[in-house]
Image 1 (tube, rainbow, N blue to C red):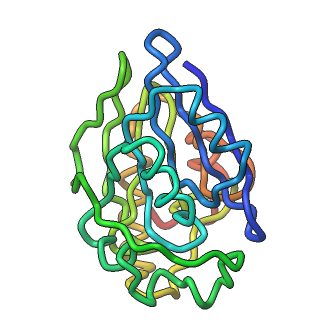
Image 2: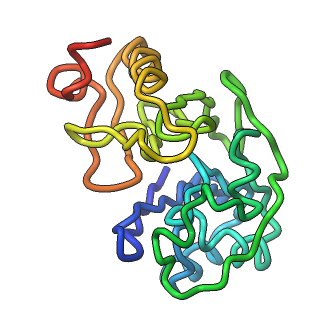
Length: 208
């Protein structure tokens, strides 16, 4: 497998291209901004899905472009639909959004807790992890977690945006911490971390 990280935009949002090297099929997680490097990397693979951990503007500004050139299916929780369709709760205006026009998109595949996304020889399991938004998701693979803005290295996502909830975030941390074994966590911002380190050092670990 190959996981390519692209740190994009003024908020340094992490976008990931996860490629099954056996089949060249891929998924892209949180395509923040349509940089040439991201688009050209995607074109070298057979992109099947655009996976959204949530639909804040700094995580979705390349969705329309990637959908146009690949026709990959957009995957997200139903609670994120209004944001992807352009509701102000996607924070487009608040975040400035790189002077790009916002192009609303429909979700092609609604997923819920426990669903599986298969591409090539790979499988990602969906964890519904509300807190940052009510439709926030984590995508869990073999010893990897794409966590969006749920958990960061030694920190966690804000809960003061529309549909955010601190109590829900605590419940989501509990769900993550119940996973057995260790995982590399690929967050929506900052550097990667591990589930083991977050269990030991994350400030929320004392409450879950």
